[in-house]
Image (cartoon, rainbow, N blue to C red):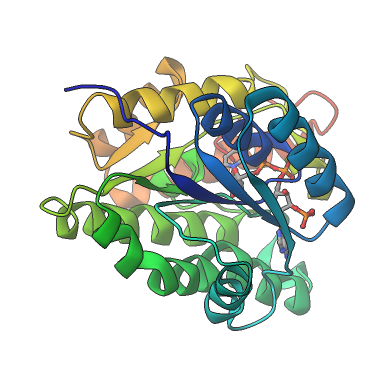
Length: 276
Ligand SMILES: NC(=O)c1ccc[n+]([C@@H]2O[C@H](COP(=O)([O-])OP(=O)(O)OC[C@H]3O[C@@H](n4cnc5c(N)ncnc54)[C@H](OP(=O)(O)O)[C@@H]3O)[C@@H](O)[C@H]2O)c1
């Protein structure tokens, strides 16, 4: 199957102000797609939009939106329509994690986490799924995580959010098969971004990918005909995700909890992590 032709396409990328989202925007613009860049930090989006227009001659539109607020789907659809833009692709990448024992976590922060990582990912997908299916030539990528593949003690809500993203996206992959829209749940393992700035425990020790490697893996899978509904980026990460299959659920959560506890007890240089 031929690589996706992104010229004459227009792709929304949420969480485009840093990390994996910015790398997605750069890769898509390089391949000729117009991009609609969404996040809260407008200055960063404006800088990226100028860079992409200058370097790749595409139209890049920054839209500032707080995805922890309810109703992001209609809000974003309204902003897109007001600018007269059409949309053929969507990368739901915005997200953040919380860590620590559940009973110690800030309830407001957990609410925001579920809103950004799950509720508005669904809301935005629903707001754009019809135009995406009608266009029938673009991509719908939902960024999950290696954490989706096992329950995550000390990251209970984040892991559960990402498990939702994985399951939801795989179902959409099936529903979209005859539409031409290529759907993928993309699960990064440890990736060098600002993600860890938000975590109480800070960064984990381990082998990190770059955001560009994650994006390249995702786009390669989509180019190759989108035979898989989900992809774990990086061979080692894929192996770790697959291990769960060999354990009972009890064993899987015990193992995940032990790794997490070890990570937290050696906070400066934690052992090989189960997350994010
Ligand atoms: N880095 C990793 O190791 C790793 C591993 C597995 C999965 N992931 C997933 O990868 C995705 C991207 O994360 P990253 O690693 O690239 O981290 P990052 O550099 O911190 O980027 C997160 C992006 O999400 C946006 N965002 C967060 N809260 C938002 C809100 N309330 N409204 C709008 N945008 C919001 C941020 O933009 P603003 O702050 O400007 O709003 C930023 O652009 C996330 O879904 C994350 O869960 C990351």
